[in-house]
Length: 261
Image (tube, rainbow, N blue to C red; front, side, top):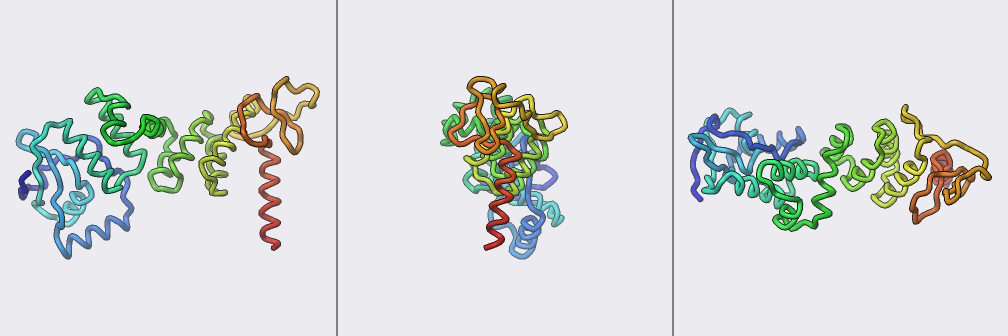
């Protein structure tokens, strides 16, 4: 692997930018460091004809461009495009430089472009098949939820649970509750189970409500709210079932009790 000073205008961005989100503060720090100390570690590229395709070092390349550099030091790898793509993801995973959604985008690229399976990807990067599947599930989410995952405002495990709610407006309301209460993955799953159990009582407008039909008319096997007795659709729950209004009232009471201490 040789190091070569390469003109920036000959370097192509990666086919799938692994690092799609970089905070403005982090970029400013990198630009400042490179302005003062130069490039401490060459970027990695593979050759494509007379040009070069970036494999690792996207933010360093962006910083060099913003500084107006004409050339940058590159490790030129003597590998094919597929190996370069795998190395690109592996390098960024080692640096903990990407989030699960960005990994999912790259997994999708490997599947579509090179015919890899989720099992192939799991074996290559030391993940379980379930971990790969979970990341791929993020691709089904709405843009707001995805952005929150990218910005590390919402853990991706909670995001996957929220994805089980099909109505985007309802999902947004539950997401706000999950983030506001800082619920962990298990608590989020329980809350989502409760919302899903409401079935057709979730309105299209996004309001979560329960049809308070008389208890004697409740379908056989339906769960009932432990507080008001309202029925919910039959689901598998390992916790007490409570309807959303009672859950919110309980949370409000706990908050008031805590503030009174």
